[in-house]
Each structure stands twice: as structure tokens, then as C-alpha cells.
Image 1: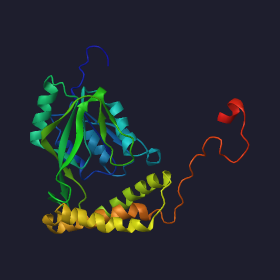
Image 2 (image 1 turned 90 degrees about the horizontal axis):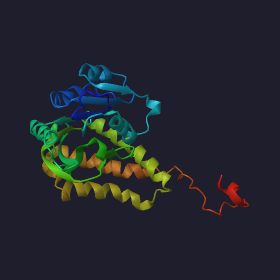
Image 3 (image 1 turned 120 degrees about the vertical axis):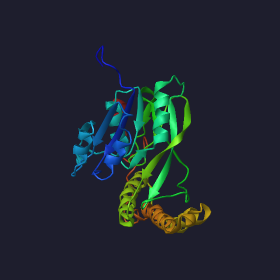
Image 4 (image 1 turned 30 degrees about the vertical axis):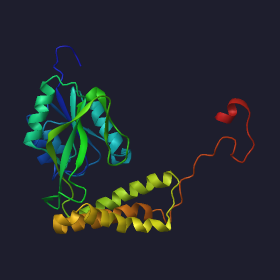
Length: 278
């Protein structure tokens, strides 16, 4: 950055895909908080880019064919950020007033902490969920730019911080799926990605994999008390259990990815010298 130009204190970064309905609330929640907003759009066909641009965001567009997963896209947004501190958000999240006040205190102070964990309050089908494993979702979202990186996972990317971390008391509102059909479509999409990861590791479907669905259902609904969230808790447990099984069921008629042969076991004649390593 050229001399005489102030370095932003806080960059808000996010990736988007057809988020015209949820993005306005997300951006409104950081109005007056962010010095810079960076959006990497992964091929939206709706008004997402227009909404982000009107909110003052710097938008970089990548085509769907160039999309390599959430992790690389979020890392790209981080690479574009220039603030000393970074707040990573998803388009379906909102910063609460208490969290915004804590963030202001952090970036204005001289804390020795390099990254902060934030608890997410999950809203499912329009209502906050408190049970079924959804009430204790802690994620690192605020961190010093030079101390953090996004993991390359295709979905459910996390942030790794080099240095000390601590927790903030304010929360993020995570307004996840709005309808049961949207939830079903999401788990089928994510299940496909998970199945590809399993196949790449040579995993095959096993007869015992069908147990994953009832076990996950009982875990979420009974042991983690999801039943206390009523019909939404039952729906969450049912569809989540289905996704747990689906990622393995997708391997039934899919051969595992071939693994590279071990050195000296290719079955053919070994080549001497450097040619053997080409």
C-alpha cells in the first residue's frame, strides 16, 4: 500500500453464490464496522454482485467452472484483503450488536491475541435451535490478517491461526436453510463432495454403513436432546442422519480412485537413474 494511505483496520471477507435474499442483512450487520468488504463471487446469476457493489464491497468474480471449493475461494478473499484484522463471514450470517461492540474494542486495542473464537446461534426454518448439537458451534472468525489462513477443504472450511486465541462473548446469527427442501438439496450437494473425498482415499461402501443413519438420528434427537427443539429438531436430526449415510451410499456403484503405485511395484520394468522419477 502506498505511503500516506491509511491501512484499513478491519476487512470483512466472504464468498457468495446466488445470495440476493440473505446478503443484504449480512452486509447491513457490518455497516459502520468494516473499513473494507471483499467479496469473491463464484458465479451468481441473480443480483448478488449488484447488491455487494452497492454496499461498497470490492467484488472479484470467478466462474463456476473455475470454482475449486469453499476453502480456496475464501483464501482468495483473504489474499485480497488489506486490513490489519479480518472478519470472515458467510452470506447467511449476521453480526449481533454485542459482537460488533467487542470487535471494535479488539481492533482499537493492543491485545496480544491473534485470533478469536465466536459462537454461532443457528436459525433453522426461521427459528433458533438450541439442542441437537447446534448450541455450541464455536468458530474462529476474527483474526490478524498475517496470522490466519483458510484451510483448503471443499466445504466447511475453517481458519487456522498462528498464535494465541481467545473467545468473544458476542455471537453470530447463522440463518441456515429456510425450507426442508432447501436442506435436502444442500445435504445432497455436500454429500456428493464428501463422497468424492472418500473415494479419493480408496474408501468403498460397506454393509455396516447403513447403521450410520439410525445412529446419527438417535445421537442428535435423543442424546443431544434435539427433540427439545420440537418439529424442527426432528427435521434437523432426520435430514442430518440421511446426509451422514448418503455420503457413503454414493460409493455403492462408484469405484475408488486409483492410488499411485508404490515405488518399485508398478509391475513393469524399473528404469535406472533419473528416468525412473520422471
